Amino acid sequence: MNKYIIKQNLTNTRLDKAVTILDNGISRMMVKKLLEEDKILVNGKPEKASYKVKENDCIEVETIEIKEIPLKAQDIPLDILYEDDDIIVINKPKGMVVHPANGNPDGTLVNALMAICKDSLSGIGGEIRPGIVHRLDKDTSGVIVVAKNDKAHIELSNQIKNKQMKKTYICLVRGNIPDEEATINMPIARSKKDRKKMDVDKSGKEAITHFKVLKRYNGYTYLEVNIETGRTHQIRVHLSHIGYPIVGDAVYSNGKNPFGIKGQCLHALRLEFNHPITGKKMKIEAKMPKYFEDVLKLLDK
View 1 (cartoon, helix red, strand yellow):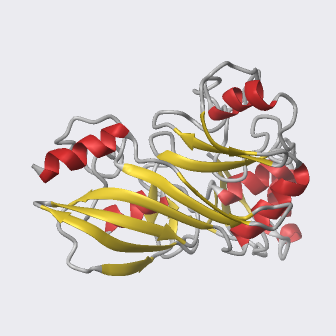
View 2 (cartoon, helix red, strand yellow):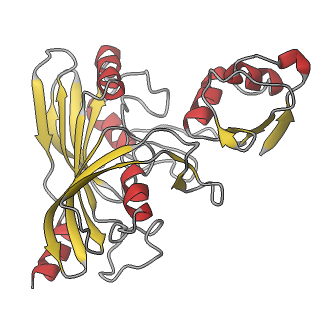
View 3 (cartoon, one colour):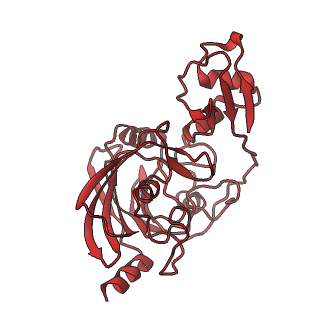
């Protein structure tokens, strides 16, 4: 973590510009990414890129070791739910990372897509994220849409930004939620105690999660969840924060895993959006994975 104290000459400069001046080895694109991930703090809390810095503000920038990651096509089977010239929709399996990063150089969804789509993925996401419009956590399965060209990428990104893409998840949580349905509206930021985790924090970014009960079990509740925003780990953080962690979540459930499963019982069931080129209404579902189904069957006994 690099720390900088704002001097008078930078007063009233935008935060994103100030960081590039303070650290001339960092690009505007990297600053944008760090800000989105709450890895740049002003006086201990995240701020928007447009924040005007003040004299004596303490700016903390989390340093990232950047390694060159060779991107290669890999013959990895994928469950393709829909494909045309503009988009491809995948049922991502639990355990698969979406794109290469330090620690996960290959074996990702992007590596698999490169073998299937060749060079027909959009370039907007950058060299290691071709076509990637949104993400799912490594151990979350389900529907994810990928853009094959820049026009499709821009339009899908705009639908997400304008909350026009509806994302529906199913999950199993520990505990009996008393409400039949409810909304969790709590801002989320990177945890101050553990930078690998996210946390509910009043200084964080808006995060809205709606849920309704599908079925009740002895000590567990099966939920349908819709999210208006797409913060990192949003559903997992919100449900854990209100006292109902997702079964199998190794990060936010205090390590309790009575079913011995690897990965959480959280599945992106359905994606609803307008086709980025034709405008046709799309509604694509991915079948619940077997490990999740098996847990529900055990609870039904």
